[in-house]
Image (cartoon, rainbow, N blue to C red; front, side, top):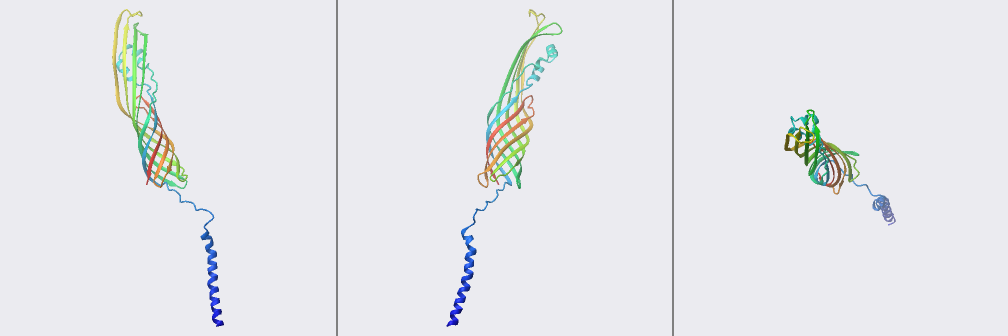
Length: 275
């Protein structure tokens, strides 16, 4: 009996000893760590697309608009040859502003602490502007005659839409991706001029003897395309793993649409889907 009792006590001691050690080892696990583990990093790799809308201001610099049409009317006249009056009018810039809407698509590549991507976008704006000027002068020609003339120019332009293809570079900060962007732009505009010339020529300074005259109107309207560049800055923010919102500023500078030089400033917001 004493032998059996000793054997039972020995068995209980052997069972309790590992259990106590196991309880000590599990204590930290059951209690939990003293800090929370970091969440998984957000991956910006992959393609995306979306739609945007914003407020756009366009500068239309009319420059020499209408001068070629005036020169065509005044061709072979002595006053144009001596004074080049077709270039006399000065047209002020116009700055229309309105809402623009469009879409975009692109692809991102993430490299540790940088995101590099390529993006294309399209924007419909329909920004219209107009500028007018007229001038009346009296001059004496080299042949001794006196000319009184009035020339008028009314230039108009409408930037219809544009598209860009741009590189993007960003610095990921979790769900937020600030970025800069630069690339090429192509735009479409309708530009035109309405001009008129009223010319009277006299043999004397008192205008008592009219010896010639010209009264004619003309003009052209054409659709033009122009290349340029685009610069911008903005930020994307992931609302979920696949949906993001964006705020962005873009500046575009185009070469001339005919005689009209155009630049665009736009601030816009966007919603996109990442896949």
